[in-house]
Image (cartoon, rainbow, N blue to C red; front, side, top):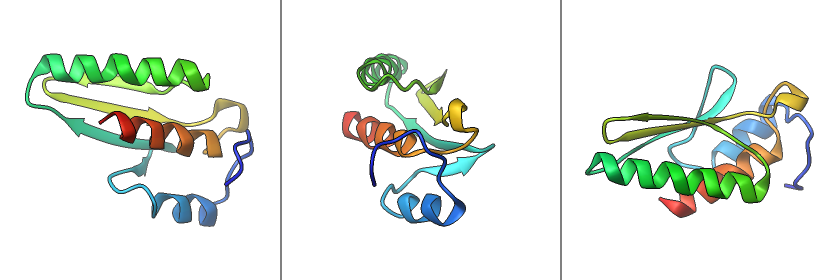
Amino acid sequence: MELAYTKLNEEQVQKALSDLPGWTIQNDKLTRTYTFETYKEGIDFAVSVGNAADVLNHHPDIHIGYCRVKVAVNTHDVNGISPYDFELARRVDAIS
């Protein structure tokens, strides 16, 4: 999949999802919740996600709870899911 700010159709989204276990579409965003042994591990992970997002210049919503971090991303410019969302998801998975 070419990295571009283009809206993916439902078939493309489902195909790309098949390569990312644990990720789902919730409220029109590519979403995954990660769990950790400690709250601090979750905080450290969230900071690493933020750093990866800055490198890609594509920023997710990050929700931090007790021993859980939810990452949710879509592309506002295309009003949907783009290849950038899946690229960020792959980079986030590499952190975990």
